[in-house]
Image (cartoon, rainbow, N blue to C red):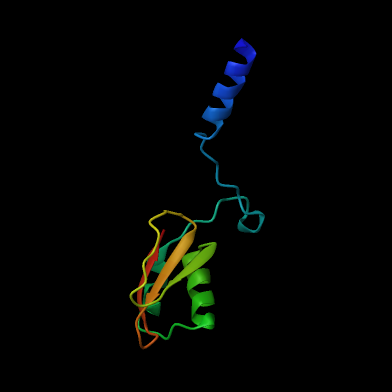
Length: 98
């Protein structure tokens, strides 16, 4: 009985464990993080696939999230993600990390 309780307690605590960011082998063994300052000059440009690729490269982020006009976003924070908001005219209005 004691072994069952101990096993269940260990299983419950496993859900509370934090994960460690894996290093990207293409990034020289370091985890990729976003630097939005390096991509601020894209504000005012058209929101296109090519522009998204350029923002991703300039920011050093691993992933890109587009923010359409009047759209809600989740508040989960990811240091390896660049967020790009654009307006109804498809012009980039904001570049942030998270």
